[in-house]
Structure formats: C-alpha cells, structure tokens
Amino acid sequence: MFTRSGGSGHKVTTDATPRLRTPLRNIEYRVLWSAEAISSAGDQLAKVALAILVYGRTGSALWAAAVYALTFLPALAGGLGLSHLADRYPRRTVLCTCAALQAVLVGLMSIPGMPLGVLCALLVAVQLTGSPANAAQNALTREVFADDEVYLRSQDIRGITNNTVMLLGLAGGGLLVVAVGASWALALDAVTFAIAAVIVRVWVHERPAAGSEATTWFGATRWVFGQRRLRVLIALSWLVGLAVVPEGLAAPLADQLNAPPAAVGWLLAADPVGFVVGAFLLSKYASAAVRHRLLGLLAITSLALLAMFALKPNLALALVLLGLAGAVGAYIITVTATFATWVPNELRGGAQGLYRTGLRVAQGVGVALGGAMAQAIGSAVDTITFAGLLGVVLAIPTAVSWTRVRRSAAMEIGL
Image (cartoon, rainbow, N blue to C red; front, side):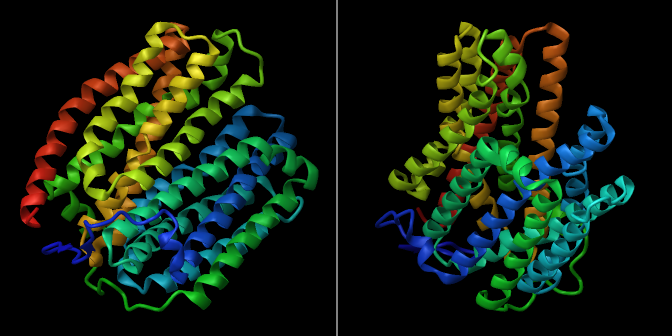
C-alpha cells in the first residue's frame, strides 16, 4: 500500500484488485449512483418525447433537430460557466437544488399545449441547471472514496450503467413514449429528478464547500491547462471524438452494407454493448496501475479497429469491429477517473465541468464532421476508415506523452 503525495491525498492499494461490486457497499455511493441512473433513464425518455412532440406539432424535421440540439448546446456553456458552483458551495446542496429545479422545469414542459417557444426556453434552463449538478455529482463521488482502486471501480459501474440505460433507450424508449404519450414521458422525467433530489438529501452526508468565495468562474480551467499531465489526459479523452463517428453514420452505413432497416439499431447498439463488456473485463482483471500502463495502447487500438473498415466489411464484420472498438474504448473510464483524482478537491467541480464540456464538444464535432465528409464523398465506410486512420495518427504521440507523464507521476509517489 502507498499514499499519493500532494494533490488529492487519496490512497491506493496495490495488494489486491477490488471487486466490481465493492463500491456498492457504500451507501452514499449507492444513492449517488441510483440518482444518476434514474435521471439518465428519464432523460432518455425525454429526448424521444421531445422529438416526437415537436415533430408532431410542426411537421418539421429542422425544428425537431433544433430542439434536440438544445439538449446539447446549453450544457456546453454551463459546463464552463457554472460548474465552479460545485466548488464554491456545498456539493450536496448544489446537487439537490439543481435536481429539484430540474424537476420543476421539466414538470412545466410536460403540461399539454405548452407553447413551443416556452418549451425551448425551459429546455435551455434544464440543461444549464444540469451542469453544476453533474459537476457536484462527479466531485462528490471522488470525495466518498479514499481508496483510488475502489473509486475506479465506482466509475466502472457508472460507465456500465450509463451505457446499459442507453441500450434500453435504443431498444424501447420510442415504444414507451408512444404508449404513454410525450407529456407523460416528460412528467416521468420530472419525477426522476424529484426522486434524485430527495434521496441525495436524505442519505448523502453534508460536507462543507471544497472551495471558497474566492473560487472564480475559470480558476479551475486556468489551473488544469497549466498542468501537463492533465493536458495529456484531456487529449486522450478528445480522441473519443473520432471514435464516435460511426454513431452518426449508422443509417447510411446500414444502407451501404445492404443491410435491413433494423440493422441501424444493431449498429448503434454495438459500441455500447462492447463498452459494457470492456468495462467489466477491465474492472475484473486489471488494477489501476495496469490500466494506466495500457491507456495509450488501448486508445490507439480503439481507433485502429475503425481503420479496419478499409477491409470493406459486411454487416457481421462491421458489428464485430464496432463492438471491439467499444470494448477497448472503455479506457475512457480510467482517463476520467485519473483526471478527477489528480485535481485538488477545491477545484474538482470546475475542472470536471471543463473535462465534460471538452469531451462533449469533441463528440459533437466528430459526429458533425463525419457526417459532412460522408455526404461529400458518398461513403460511410470510407469516412469511418479515415476517422480511424486519423485517430491512430493522433493517438500515437498522445500515447507517448502519456507514458512520460505516467512515469513521472509514478516517480512522485515512489513506485
């Protein structure tokens, strides 16, 4: 066993790898995990409900797409501008207040006949409110666990849960919304936020604010970009922007592979299924130290698998490649957890907001550019191949930088 010097002060056990279920023994984590899971499930329903509601009223695909964009764009601004609130104020208070406010806002959205302009304004407010809530949730989870290995397993559980919720949303979200109606689906989402606020308030311990009144909007951002090892972790996370290109091309890819319409869902599901399997295997068989050593290789491999679309795969091989890429892509859990651990507690909320925003921007830009390229060259397969090749070119020097950073960090803690 050894103790990390400086920074977080969290300890790492090196004698044994904790089981995946170990974090669930902690009641605070169980509550935070449950609150996130039920809110994520509600959000999946809400996205489908809004698309159906807006398209049903306007008959416009552009309006439906614009409203869907509103579930993404405000969160980017909020991630940079509001996440510092999770450092300046007690995190449980921030999380509960934001969840309660989101419950009210989504509840108003569920009122039948709500004018479209008001609906959009409420949606923007919901997304902005979610930024400090996400920052508080992530920072609180790091505070709950003193042991880095157990904390890493807690993030494995989160990754598995979030991707499982995504799969369930793909499988049955639309059917459920059609069955209960868009307004009732939004109402259910409001209830999930209310439940989250209550259970966090009751079972999560109150802790004083990690920062102070001197905590500034972009203080964490300036500090993070002043740290080479954190810049390298951010670069590793941005590689995901190329790894998600196939998600935006599922429909044209299925068409190019001469696959049936149902294959669009299979292609979309391949990555999250692989991710769940990969996260489980890494959690079960690899310690934090091993995962740190493998990060660069895993990042390169996840993109090299996409470059193998140069083989012009049929549907079966395409699903295998996407599934394997998703499994190897579970390395991002280790990147995220390491980033949180290497940031001082008093800056962790703002830093997590920066990290999350960068990751989402990279994904959004990757999907958009992938779509534009596929449209221009007329081939989804070639676009995915190019994304993979470009990713490998970028991942190799990033992996080399990570190896240097990891060795430097290991020397600091006496490994």
